[in-house]
Image (tube, rainbow over all chains, first blue to last red; front, side, top):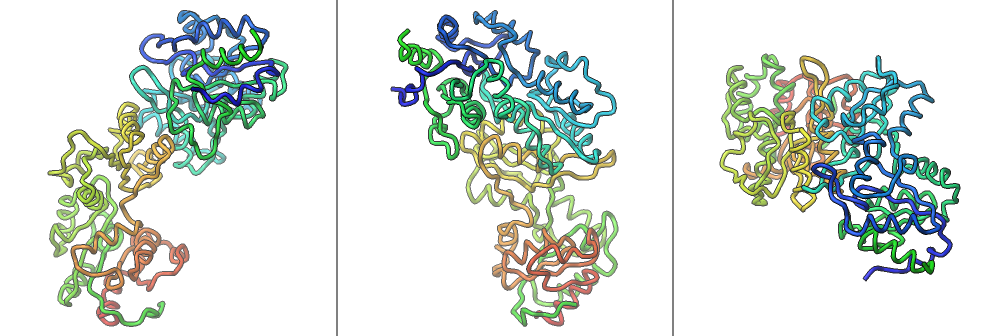
Length: 272
Length: 263
């Protein structure tokens, strides 16, 4: 039985922000696997009067490729509704005239096509998966240790995520490794950075208290949204673990079995 | 010279660091062999203690014997030995993320169906797949044991990442703390003394690293003597509080002090 105290806010809600991996689908071989009920749930949200956006720390593909995949899985989603870290970091690089050394997944490289990468003066790391080899980590380390003022951007700071064949280390682990090696603090682009959530709220034209975030990552989705003034609900799918419900620093406004149940509860409360 | 504030105590054992204290790369520190012989003539136990993640005891012994030091295999205690005793004590079956050269120090340890992770400097194992495997084990409750947490080290082709960054990453991923077994951990020193039948207050440590050798030993209840050889830099003694029991120019001066004042 789901804890229902959070649902009181459903009536005054104007928008919902959904995390993607672990909420809509589990990633893995090929396109991954749809989490049962999620395609329907997105459809029902779209048919309601709530605004809908998607917010992901996915950094293995360009947004276009990523949205293609979700459409193949049956989701009704378009590129402008999806917020991901690569376009955000490209904007920051431009603004600060920085030339990155990239340690990212091959699939996301096209997002950086028009960025000057010669003679790098910062490092950008994303979820590079198999590209997180000792050699590639060493190269990133040497760029940083050779800079007078080393700058490290991390596209998210997730600890791990779930693929169909098990849990996998996320970019945050490698961010921490480089932080420790170089004695520096990375700048996180993406969830849980308040700047990132705010850009989604701006796009919806909503105040934080008018929006609800639904995600499987307690710290980055739920905690990040709450930090920004939004409500945060965790689903028991994806990387969810029982211990999340007694986390020392983050308490979700609600915990539900899956996205379908969350959407049911919200829409019922609103009298749909 | 700092005076002998601790007064006389019944000294039973001397722990001696290797690299930088009795030898620097392939050369002995002048006078070190003779000093060791003098120490052996007094009735006092000797043990050589070092942080290594890739050199086995055999390799260390062979190098020292080439340099004409008189010692035996059982007198060497390394961070790898410390990991081994911890595994034996807790009856863990480890996944060993170590370079091949270090594996011989774990001969006889059951590594089937591993339920603990031991991590040293192992570039060949620091790939995504192997780290994922280690991560999943630790997340499921396997203890994470680190040989040490050095940030980086110097290689012929430049600086290279040490085990520390990867240990730190796994700690972050799993919300757990690694058990570090090498110097300057207290347990390292107590384990090194355990088969000598003496307590820390009856032992002295000689080394060139103020934090790892002297600070660590003193924190464990031993006396610490800092030598001005190896990696020693002017002012290193100020890095630790309380300061070293004594600072000496070299290992042979440290031995002279022990023979004259601590027995």
